[in-house]
Amino acid sequence: MLKPAFLAASVSALLVFCVGPAAAAATKHANTTTQPIRPESVAAKRSEGVAEARLIEIYNLIGKLQNREALAKAGALVEELPNFQLAQLVYGDLLAARTRPVKAVGDIPEALAQSGGTTLVELREESLRRMRALRERPAPGTIPSQFLALSQRSKHAIAVDASRSRLYLFENTPSGLSLVSDYYISVGKAGTSKTSEGDQRTPLGVYYINSNLDRKTLKDFYGSGALPINYPNVLDAKRGKSGGGIWLHGTPPTQFSRAPQSTDGCVVLANPDLEHIIRTVEIRSTPVIIATQLQWVPAHSTRTASKPFEEALFAWRNAKTSGDLQQILSFYTPDFVSNGKTLAQWTPTLKTELAETHGRTIQLKDVSLLRWTDTADTMIVTFGEVADGTRTGWTKRQYWIRQDNRWKIFFEGVM
Image (cartoon, rainbow, N blue to C red; front, side, top):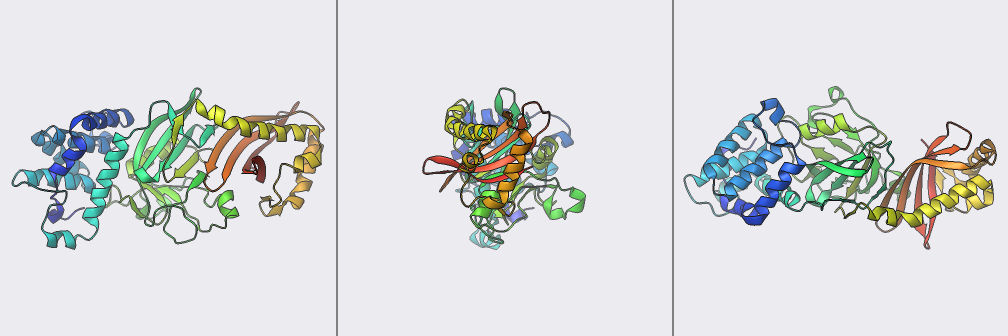
């Protein structure tokens, strides 16, 4: 919790965020992407997303010069969530404004500001990140560009925008991905683009939640629990990246949220938000995109974007149906690897699969296509491979890379 000396800041600076059309937009979006604000029990008020919605409501009351109402709501918020440091700072803004004018956020004596170290700077940045993310909302009907197609086996998907300190939770409906919630998050102290153990960076890429750690087995530092992701993934390993233990996890009891860049590489959420995600998502089938900045595109455009790759994928399927081993091998890169096996060592597995299908047509079921583009264009594909006349088959994941304008496989594994 903030020391009392730091309960002073600027109402005038908050007005920059909240007056005029921007304030109306912030109010509208806070109400549509978080739980509605109602006079419910304290327990309900602590549910996912609501604390932030209440904070934004306070900002907007300040913007309307309704400081008395804002002060009452801020007081109630810090009483119920005394570890919500940013709310404490806003409460201090309002208290200070009752006795003297303040000129800027954190307009307190220099000696007190210095004794607080980086706390005040971090809280200012947290406030800016929250407001920016709530003002600059994704356009309706858009999704992150990485989600080309998602099987109905994946009930949900997650995307993280590090530049906005924001995590977006999607439900995978029969009509496509639907944004259902979004939350403030913290990432690595050194930013993103993790490459090695201990670099205090959050990785960038396409990952999957691979387990759910029981909070009873964790230290208080991790809050309400942890959802590890599969860093380093196949592409990371190919690029020589190291390290591990990258989780989505909560905050210790003394903190409601953490500064935007304050973790050792994990993605950290407020405990109520994490608890909602833990209750919602499934392990192994929930993809997690982590990007410096998400690119939002119309959902219908992903079909067009995926078509060239789908042609390559089904050409590979047709080659397997034909049983022509050399034609099949032409789809793999020379540096292909599968769990330590080179292409030459993987070839007997392909021969065995061909023998078992006996030339029957191969069907690809429940296909998911996730694209990652940085210095290379990569596709992460998950599907069920079933031969006609059989009820079961393999569930596979492949990593494809585009080389000389042709898609090729550099990893394939049975899940």
